[in-house]
Image 1: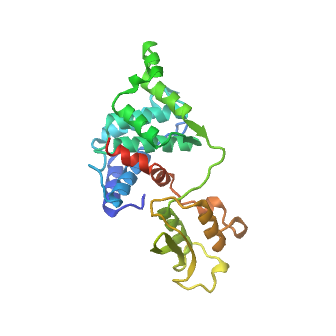
Image 2: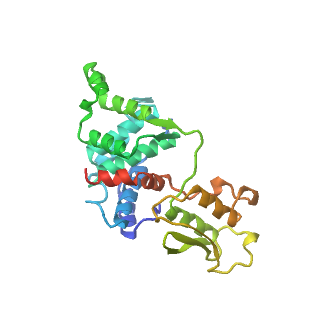
Length: 295
């Protein structure tokens, strides 16, 4: 599985995935993250920080069995009776496990936050916490400081089983919303991957703009592109950086310019099929992840 990350990180990711033998999740009746999903989040975060010149303290699992047991928290129970069943509970126990068990050498808080948000997104749920709230909430979990919340203290007083997870699940429910419609969004790095599938690419960044150019035949061909030669410039869009999200208006413009629209046989699902929600989450939470790196 290629994550489109630095070769050395890809090598380490592949080795970790090959080394760890995750349990089958085929029988699970609700969305969960696999070991591969959590590893992907961790290595994409590592790649993001390396490319920004910061790096992280250590990459990969520090204990394979600990990572497996952390991921298995989502499906604890007996027979087909699961302890946690709502997306909020499952996301809460996964977040708590990654952040507090420290299965990775570094970036456990960042990996836990992104994995939690990714799991919620699979149930069409988005967190509504702002940057500082995300940081403080994750740090409270990591430092075992939930006792400062009256609701948590009440759960402890009532002797509720696993009060941390019950509290976190309620907190996530309160600070999230159901997405009425899934909206595609991509970073410039992802857009480049998508465009190359059609024979185009992003090229020649100047100032705050970048060109969309034809580079040759891709895996999808269209008669509308007859007469184009490699290097032909199609249009120019704003460009704040590879890790930033592309404005929806610019994506619409590119699709219109390249005739990559439903009426030409390319609907949104087809166009965005290479878009990675994990990369988008990392880009969206960039500020919070940077702050967590120093907490």
